[in-house]
Image 1 (cartoon, rainbow, N blue to C red):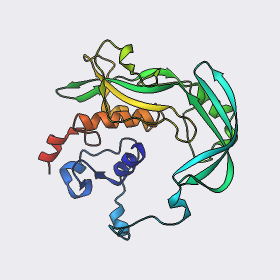
Image 2 (tube, rainbow, N blue to C red):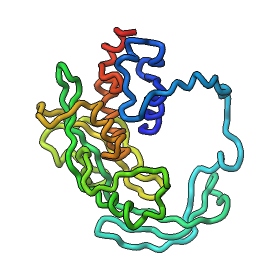
Image 3 (spheres, helix red, strand yellow):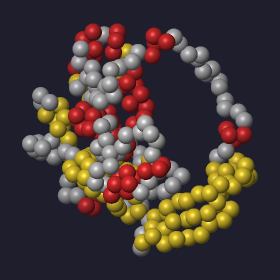
Length: 261
């Protein structure tokens, strides 16, 4: 979701309106890619070939529907998680495909939840709270794993980063037990790191009173695109925008934007 929304914002396409911002001067005057630079109209390069409506993927890769361990050893990490270290083969209809490859998978008995505190201001629209959160893995990646960094890839290696609340809860349970106010579920969970962990991220919002430290949700999304939070945080904010019928690139509600068409 984060990837596709960044793509549409960079292209100047507004999914909620099914419109290109370049075709509507009143929208264009308000438009911001929220940290992605100037919008680029892809229509200037001509149209690509249309995908047939009856298209069906073919070939060996299209048949792959799973994977299976050929061998592994189990390494205990703590009381709630362990690492499986071994080799895996892809499968198609339960039949092995291709050669075995090295694989590591963290298995745990818990999931995680991104929880954002928000309110809706009559003039500023949705406001959210970001807090300083420790991110030790960012420091590790920027030091011990320097050799794995791409030369053109800029990542935030600071220990403290702005983020929403990131809580752990027992798998099959709910993070609601950790809050006094009701949590609003925002869509279905998704894999925290598919292929490397069985942890799923869940997405929740909780309504709260307005506070001085709260910022517009468009600003919070831009913070994510400049190295704060992570992809799950940005996806959470985008889900909240969808629930509130808010278009962050225009900083307008869907109803307000429709009136400018």
